[in-house]
Image (cartoon, rainbow, N blue to C red; front, side):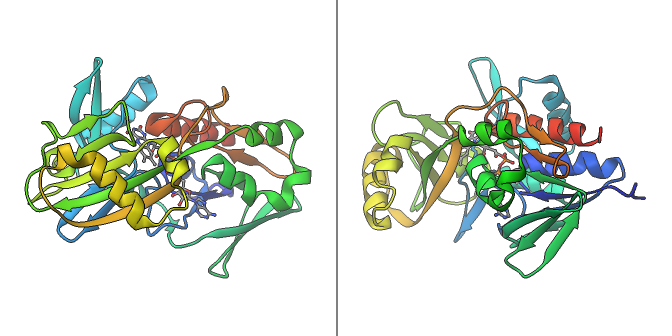
Length: 317
Ligand SMILES: Cc1cc2nc3c(=O)[nH]c(=O)nc-3n(C[C@H](O)[C@H](O)[C@H](O)COP(=O)(O)OP(=O)(O)OC[C@H]3O[C@@H](n4cnc5c(N)ncnc54)[C@H](O)[C@@H]3O)c2cc1C
């Protein structure tokens, strides 16, 4: 049963899904729009041949009590499982890949995938969201959860109507880019158990063996994440050149032939700095919240808490 309140949420990553669940539970009519093929955003899992790869977030940690409650629930349902422990903190992974968590959360929600928002308009205290599918979505409230620079672009037509402080904060959030090279090998990799290695120098920061991690079967399926400065330097270079450089740097950890590979470029990988506030909120020209991992704490946990806090604020209008 709905309570007559409605919200369009742009972005079905962990921030958007978390907020949508809370608002729906309180009787709001909620629609999630995402330009991707499904829910998950940067909690992304992709298949190449028989190999399955987490190619965005590799794992997450839990520090906040409210995130702990959610993760315990997810673990009891078999959605997440510990991968390894480092510096006293358990690193959790999606039992079926990081994207599996988002798929589960999305099941009871109205998600419109392959729906890219191209414009946002407001009139008479309500929002009108225009998508590349030709559809229009109207609601009394709007929540944006795309990486902050993308949310800023989407609000361009309403810029003059927003509080100056909101605009200033949005202008200050930037993200690092990150190349992710996904490589399926001919045999096992030399990545040590339990399937990851961190590198302090050179073009690579992290290599994960998704087969050892437990989300792929058969020969090794390896995700190689590039350092932000390397990604910036080769941002517009040809894919072959970037892949060649990353494969060369990863050679000691591969130890066998690469059978097939794909290169993905995350333009907005992780925020450089985050704001103190967990979300931005305005009541004029109509109820509007901006959330995601740029607000109040980076990473999966920060995005979850941002979505949760923004939804709780929305409930007070
Ligand atoms: C390479 C990489 C490695 C990472 N490693 C880790 C890690 O190990 N641990 C960790 O905790 N975190 C890690 N992260 C960060 C983590 O993935 C993010 O902090 C978190 O997933 C962000 O969630 P979100 O909901 O804020 O944003 P997102 O997941 O980005 O969701 C935003 C959604 O908005 C959608 N969107 C954007 N523009 C539009 C539009 N115009 N119309 C419709 N939809 C739109 C996008 O498609 C996306 O699905 C990593 C990220 C990357 C990329």
